Length: 359
Ligand code: FES
Ligand SMILES: [Fe+2]
Image (cartoon, rainbow, N blue to C red; front, side, top):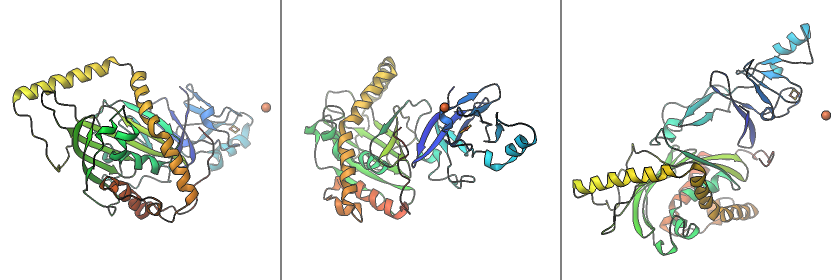
């Protein structure tokens, strides 16, 4: 019912839904005197977004349809001028996320990598999302999510315990050459159970995990670990994470360093199925705000590390980030690969736009 502001690479956008249910994304500055349209309102009678400052109004294509301070020929001339119009970006909606193409013209992506479909492969249509703006940049966020080594420490008591920490068996399945991202296999331990699976950086926005836990003697099997995080570069020093809670499985790790034994009998399978249903039922009982509170606690627990790590990195201004880090462990390999990937495929051509506002 109201327009919503959004940030991407330091630029402000307004997002709104027209009367046909189509999502519209436009630069968040009225062509008249640049007031934010996200502070305006949606005129449902005329199907327009209206600037709250002087009442100029725009249709879904961004064409100016009303300038209340004008009439007659001069109004017609002003409405016909491209200067009174605003861009309406190409938009795609996939798995309840609105994607927009801000680089002008039509999207040049094909059907392969980098598309919303490729990045969100394996996410169930019914997956719930949790969204949070974080006070550290996109690269720190991606670094953190492809780093299983910090979990027992930074998230002690939440998603692991310090006693879980061990040398992580890490194998890069691909290096930094591929523009579409890279993947790695890993074996670690969390909450006392060995975990084995694959992590993927699906360039440019998604990190996805698919792993399984060992079954301890006398204990029921654990639910597989599936996590998909969309990492959005909102503005310098800030990022937004969209975490998919319940992901379906249309993909499996291709190969594991030490495959876990398959369920021995139909009885075990039945037990797994029963447990799965029980977990979905139990999670269904929690209100969304409760699950979000837990997710917030999780992100809170290493927020300060990333925020200050990034500040320190900015202060040192190394030519390459790898010069500032000392990363001798196999567990550090994905971070090293990410930094190489960034310098190969995402060179910063000039200074990023300065911060516009803290929203
Ligand atoms: S700034 Fe939007 S109508 Fe004047
Ligand atoms: Fe005034």
